[in-house]
Length: 114
Image (cartoon, rainbow, N blue to C red; front, side, top):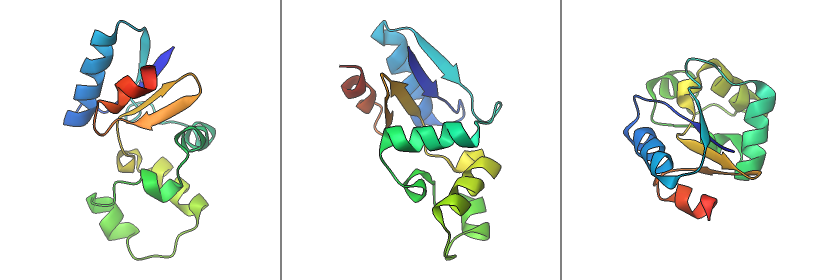
């Protein structure tokens, strides 16, 4: 089953969801701002994406700039920041068959589903 980590206020996330709706594949929507993900889930996502925690951070968000920018943070500290402020997470993230993509651009979803 396909899973999308979705923020309905984000245009790219809405575009990704629309692409999934037309794909014909069944999928689950995780509204991670309403139902925060766990540390284990976040670490699993990072592993499937094959990226470091800092690569998942939206570094232009105000909270990142005010609280974290310029600090020497460990991977765990960045994970803790993402858990505390889930809006820092790049989106949408789509998971399928043990792999994941940050769907920016949304067309990355099609490559994952092929």
